[in-house]
Length: 222
Length: 222
DNA sequence: CAACTATTCTACATATTTATTGAATAGATA
DNA sequence: TATCTATTCAATAAATATGTAGAATAGTTG
Image 1 (spheres, rainbow over the protein chains, first blue to last red):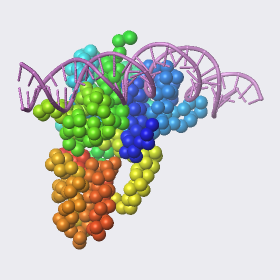
Image 2: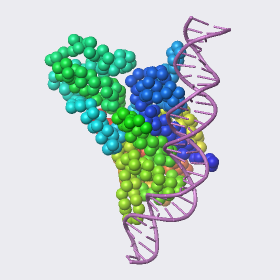
Image 3: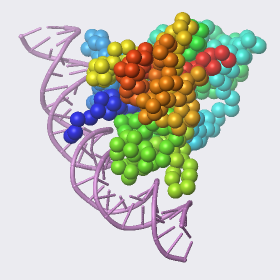
Image 4: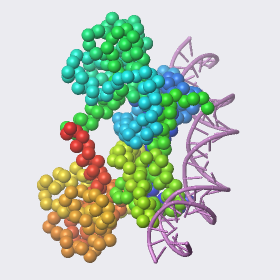
């Protein structure tokens, strides 16, 4: 091969990053890791794939510097390398959700499937919480809440919800969030709550979306 | 294949976007198109590739909704579909330039190759222009300047520079910019100017980088 | 309407990516 | 030190991506 120009070499290197996120399973891995660090085995369960394949995908992400590893006893714990990874993936999603009609249709189907009538965004949450008293609950696993959550949110993991209904108010609107727009936990939560006659609605955005919005605001204030 | 869940289908669709930018030549195409719309033939010359291959790459970008087409006489003119494309590519580059050591090294080599001593960023430009009088020149082809440029910049395409030296001041610092960090036009310009005893330095950022910074600021003011 | 031109398509060879399986490894634990 | 366990590696087959060369096409121009 002829000697590539430096410009071409830079594009080649950059393509290692884009190549790493060009696979759906690897995007899913990044999304799970955005919530909290996990071991290979846990991740393989989350994305429904063999441990060996999961490990290989994780190595691709690692060689592109998108994730870091750390040993913890017998486990190798993978984590997101940098907030710039979240920002990049968020930019991809914003584009996809806006431009790819098929994604719109899939999300609409998803909501129909789940009998979902109402759901709000982060902005809506802000507006609503100014007008009325609301209770914000985080229905992700407790470890994900501990790794980071929206300020003011109370952790009530979906698995515990049924037994902790007495902690919830009937006179306030309950807003439930989970991992984000493609996650079903908050949907399942509000379904249960509505059955039990609570006024509950789902917020589509999660902690990661909140965090990205914060850094955006922080940057602009400088 | 078993029916994929809606979540998996969304990731599949999203991967069409990431897949489109996973090839170095296609990233290069996006970068060229970020400056100005171009025909297939012009683009094939810019990225140094056959017309047929260029056309195929462009079709991948089009099917991922990253670019649009428009007929103009005998030509098909490709253009960037949306500012969200620029934002996404910018996020990829920010990550790459920050995390991939090899890219740092390549850029350093690039500057050494070009005997480049000093170069400034957009922020530096702002600071410097507050302290002293500077002249900002855009050395890209005139059509790219016409498609959009940094306010206050004067268009002096590299090809015309030699003949238009009388338009330039000897008592002000001249700051030259072109397409961005990987573009050589501004470097060639300041080399010529320095030979002719002008005080000239290169700005690495270009119009696209400026535009992205603007929308960032605009967003935060809301 | 014929000729032309820029672009796209087709067929092909080669290279890369992916998931699967089972073996190998590194490090912790007993 | 031996055993155990989570992870990684290696080999394979199938699928997908890539570049090339030449043919086909759509739309413009004369």
